[in-house]
Length: 175
Image (cartoon, rainbow, N blue to C red):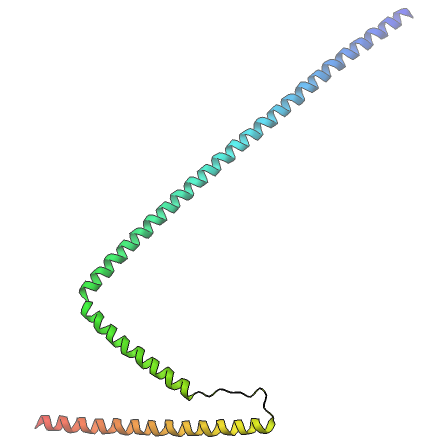
């Protein structure tokens, strides 16, 4: 029995030693895994920093190129404008005078139209007042249409007279 006990004790010691070795191996394996994980994290951080720096350089380069192109286009436009103004300055001045006339004619037209327009204040009117307002607007529109017709007739009549006078002038010049 003592022999069995000794054998059992040696087996227990062997088992504890092997278990201790396995635990040490497990601890060293965990340490290596953790070390490798931290190395990978560091490599990933470094790689992401490099990518950010590269992206920043590319963005700066793109912005610089766009700025140079814009500056070049602006210089080209300035040269074109300078050559055009030196070539057509007289024509440009005449065009300005004509547009000035057009502007004053537009202002006159706006003034006349603002005088002719009537505001509609029909929000608080009863049925009878609305009928009166409608009749008033109808009469006013009838008057404007009559005036328009008269002006168109006068325009066509003047156009006809101008053509007749031109023909007379051309006939007299032939003689």
